[in-house]
Image (cartoon, rainbow, N blue to C red; front, side, top):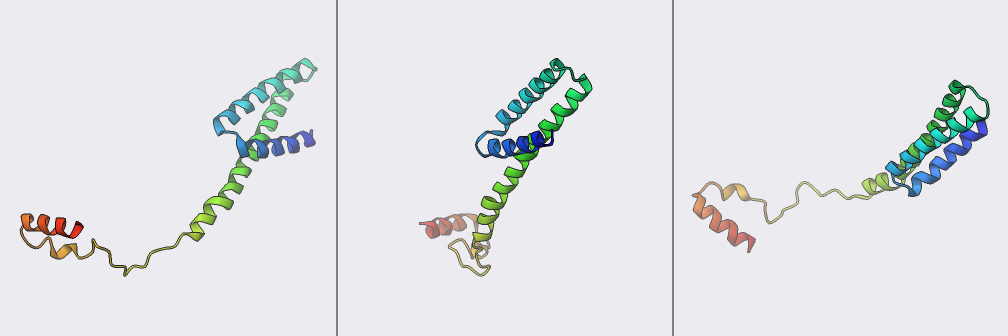
Length: 117
């Protein structure tokens, strides 16, 4: 049964690559029910059947989590490391707004509109 857990982990890896997590969770639920029912019909105790069904489900979910971790390392971390940060001393057309607020509000709006246009 150890190979079953390894195969379930690999299947979890492959399914996580293309299957949405909700659909994958429903598939795992179906696998639990079918595996438990099959084990009971084959003569295993209900306790043993449920233990193995949950172990296989845990292996499937572990494969899914591992693939999501791989995706995180490949895509998210790559983009974070490539992002260029702006310098703190960059002048923009919106810098220097503090001198506009010192005068009357009407004059502030005229100057602001003039700067934006």
